[in-house]
Image (cartoon, rainbow, N blue to C red; front, side, top):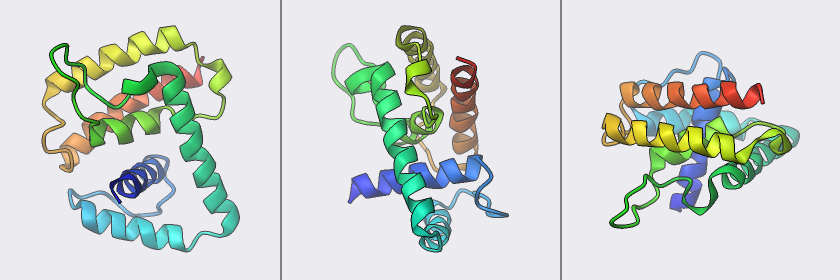
Length: 151
């Protein structure tokens, strides 16, 4: 079920950051936020659901194309770290763009790896559900989205 939870978090924050949730705001209560997102998604017609499925698949393909197998892990030369939930949702959001063929993987891999190191050092990934942590990581993801949209 953790995979479904991660996907819901990605979709919720994607819809929030792209202003598709009306007046819904995130206020450091992830359970309340995700319940409201589920209500919204449950009201969507089939075409909107397919759009979200394609968005998710596109984000996964783009992220894999640029970052490979360890896209959602912070680097550690001594041991392989687990997938980081905050990194998953923010990088997936950053790479949820329509045209993977426009992504220069070596350029963006270097940029994203640098950003991942900065994010890891920030300590904003320890209490990932606080409003400040959410804002921090999605503001950083928006930097990547801007660069990707101009590629």
